[in-house]
Image 1: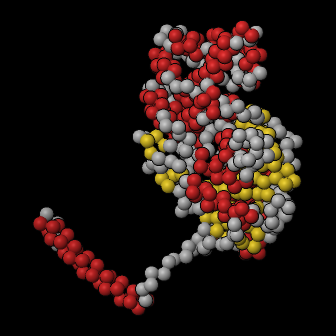
Image 2 (image 1 turned 45 degrees about the vertical axis):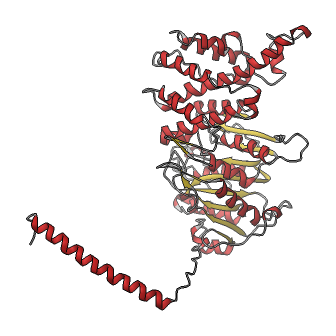
Length: 524
């Protein structure tokens, strides 16, 4: 799934030239901070996308003028789900002016014009290209670079070229920003695992801290990838409704653009999920989330009597179990949830967290726990895990799982894609997801069996014996060691002889070191 290309990381989203495009764009960054530069680049890529789609439709309408088509009628474009691009925002106009010192103001005017004529994009696009700190020569060069790629014509849209370029750039900016990068980007392999586990084919999908909307994009990709024999030429109908919320305004804008470039409609609200829940009455069939880990300043002291805290009041100094209970609160009667949390959430007993976890387990909400390998995330080195909750674990869709929890220890899986980052491969994801699907009774997944060192279906009594700690390593046991066929006595003789030989070698080395020290004047 991933391969190394220069200094860039392939996130599984590559179409062949993203790495080269990234390297060229990054070379134009100069001394600009990555957090700032991403809005410059991604805003221009978005503008190129809608301009490409517009120009293709414009050419068709020009050819059909004799039959009454009007290339300058915005409704002709909206009828085809294509954004109307006013003359001042068209890419050809910007490209022609790319070398002018006024290019920053022209790009701002273009963004403002698109927002004015397309209400769905109001307040979404960046409009600060004219600021003095932005080098206009580099901006012009960036426009020239982006001019060389087609991203919005029909052929490119069919291949999701822009979606892949956009995601690749998001991942690279996340890597460049380090800790801050995790605020808007969850690694693709983690998102894909969550989605493959809970299988959001149809219904309401909710992410209370949606970042740049990666969970929603992957959900739609999942539906398309699993579409077959549905009478629509292999194109899946996306029978899901998308609901999200993001507290960071600039990240919210990324989320809106990320969905818009793929033609995905969603209700993505801006605001603090805990203190200004913008979807208060939503009951979701699927919840996918990667909340920020161990947030201490979430204002929990102002929410002590909140109706969401059915299983215990979360500590004011850590939002982890605030997120868990917010997710449970928004689950439909047969809803399922998959989300990322810090490993501490599986075992912490501080400030009542242990009691909340116990209440969730005893309420038969906890379906599966997965320990993840380290180094998956750009934002933190804190070890992470995945929680999977189900409101109704006895429903007719799957077998009755009440009284058991599935534990999966995936810490040894994945491969390094560079010195600091690991990713789960497609094979890893399939193995984990298939284990869960077999365990919960999906016939196509085969029969479930415990695998020492990897997975264990533990009865609730066993979880109680471990004081409701949910760390998979406590349950899955040690990986079975292959018998090498060497008799014990023979092996001990061989190892003892090997040890004696090594001891002799050690004595020789000690003597050599002592002689060298003596020659240097440091002997006894």
